[in-house]
Figure 1: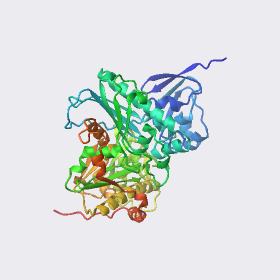
Figure 2: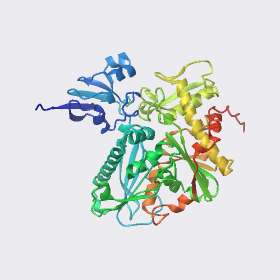
Figure 3: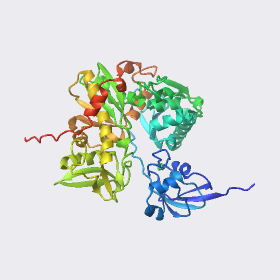
Figure 4: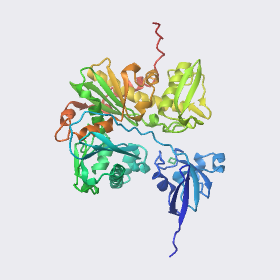
Amino acid sequence: MTQNPSQRIILWPTRVELSAPAGTPLRDLLFDQGVEFPCGGQGRCRGCRIRVLNGKAEVNRAQQERLSSEEIASGWRLACQCVVEGDLEIELRQWDAAILVDDTVFAFRPRQGLGVAVDLGTTTLVAQLLDLARGRVLAVSTALNAQARYGADVMSRLHFAVLGGGQHQLETLIRQQIGALIEQLLFSARKHGAEIADIVVVGNTVMHHFFCGINAEPLAHYPFEPAEGGLQTFRSSALGWKHAGDPLVRFLPCLGGFVGSDVLAGILATKLTEHDDLVGLIDLGTNGEIVIGNKDGLLCASTAAGPAFEGAKISMGMRASTGAISQVTVNRDRVHCHVIGDGTPRGLCGSGLVDAVAAGLELGVIATSGRFSHGENSWMLASPVALTQNDIRELQLAKAAIAAGIKLLMQRKGAKELTRLYLAGAFGNYIDRASAQRIGLIDFPPERVEAAGNTALLGAKLALFSLDSEDGSYAGVRRRVEHVALNADPSFQDVFVEELAFPQARPTSID
Ligand code: FES
């Protein structure tokens, strides 16, 4: 039998050296190095480009369609379409996701032992190891969700799970990955698994079902309600994690529909149930989650915003990493772009997109209908990065979904205004609040809008101390939150269509 010898693969600029037999998909090798595959490796998005410096990588049809002949001639390839053919040296433009890791000090009730809080996101995972007696964070580990090779967003992963029969695969993958993250935490803090007393995991409804092994099929069709969204508990050994002492693992309960325990954790972290005035919490992503209310009760909903805020489906969209235009400002009728890393611009991330459209509205380049005012097809921001008509359209769809959701929940609450609006997650941290108001995404004065960081992780940490609930199910909070299915609201479509247009410029006030 002939042996398939290992080939040497050198990655630049990290100089990591890997070995793999010929025929190994590059996607499998590179994902472990943190390279993302935004379209699930289908050769559609160009998000996984690499450059061959030495060696050979075949160009298939998908690459011919997605890469120009100049790019192909200078060695550019789509990693998701290539396999190892021989020794290879490649440069990868690693687009590091900006991961928010919360280390806020919070009030706690001391306990013995160590605790682990995990924010299981569709894209990224963040885990922290805590000393429960002192409330201190001892170690942090982060990773891209290993399930992403089966699709970048929840819908494509649901598709793989339900129609592709891959749910068990996704469950095994995520349980193993979180187990490995916990090992890393222990290793870097020089602690033993026997000291772990409690593990809390939070995530959206789809991640909840995948991790807990609950059939995700009901989430793939109307009315998109979870089969079983409650608190799930396991002994760590049942998940394949070997910690002497076999600590309890709690996956906190969902709130309904696509509103998961990451939002429940967000409510705990922002103390929404303690406010007298009406306040809100929004997590902007492919699914935008919205919570509005106060100590008398909260309404929550999710709305399908699409991937525009994450830079996907945008012609030159990318995540917030080196080369992304993350800020666009107007000064004396001229546009200024801030590029992450200060190098050559390579694309536009979500916050840059919102800014760019706000700037276009300010300069009259874009009309309130969303069309370019003078019939152009695109607007050059900073060569070679341009904004196209289709990009504006994608943003309009995303912002209308969020704005309509906020409007309907406020109507139901009989609220005219909110005294504070918390923005959760990475995007909430980077978005310019004035631009968000200018495009009508978040129609509140910027001073009332507050970036709240990784509220999911903070809420998971609070849950380690069971401040709210002795059985860990947060039944008290959940009773005060009513889930609203926006897709079943007959007025949603009308309000959504109204919200597609951008607002007129506000008259400038003279003090
Ligand atoms: S083109 Fe390779 S992941 Fe999308």
